[in-house]
Length: 356
Image 1: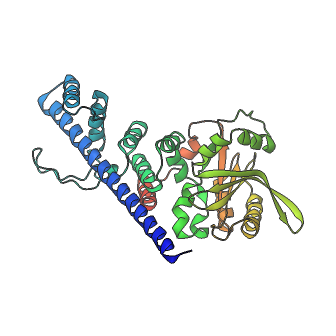
Image 2: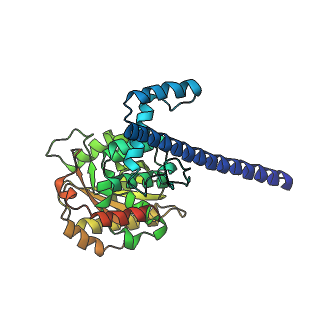
Image 3: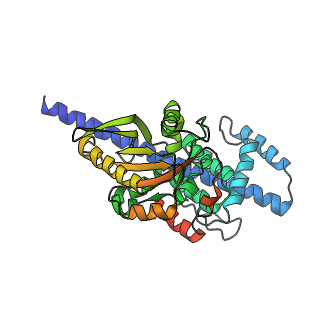
């Protein structure tokens, strides 16, 4: 092939990538300005109502006037104006989450700086405000949405499945077994408890019935796992030294670029399960993993677990393994609630995930 043609193609590709990068940066700036605008409108509405005693009707009047003045510009409905006021009130006392403004007096110009809340869309900000009341929980979801590019649906799914609490209490050995570059994402890939309420399952069930229930609801299962997983197969066959072995579920994690082996257990966790999982992971890495993929990760999902027993077991394993439980209810179990870290510890974890 003519060298000039190759160079021409490379040149075109570079220009396209440059345009995409600049478009993305422009979109981020537009979003930051929009959030700043909504913040200031919310502040003005709150100020006028608080200082001058204006009632609710002012929002209706303002909405009509803005829509008349800016026809075709979305975002000035009465409902959205009330959301702007709520947005300001909720975050005005939180220095880390509010837009960074220097207010000398109400009339003076605000110094506009890139705020944490301006790094995700208005829609996602409102979802977090309405569904989360704890400031640290809000900060967690804002940072996770920003860092991992969660869509609106993924964000809602994670909030409704109480990802904040489940990620904070998960048990893995990733600090010792996963390279630092991927460690944060790996920790986010394992919850402490999985909600399998999408499966119609009696209290008494076998492992094969549990697996079948998952396979019959595979989309719901992958959503519960966290959104970055894809399904490879169940009862995945491994041939080691002419012996047959089968992994209950084999998944692939797009961001981690690695295989995820799932072992399902309907009883309480016992240390022998980790030894079996180490064997599976070694076999996957030797015979299935592609050269450019990262080492495989194992998740053992049991009906119950003793946390001390899990902790001691994971100390002695040299393959990346997480141990979780499953349940068929939506609310967070009280025994997990009691294990949540202190506010200071949660802040440290959030800083770690946020890359600070």
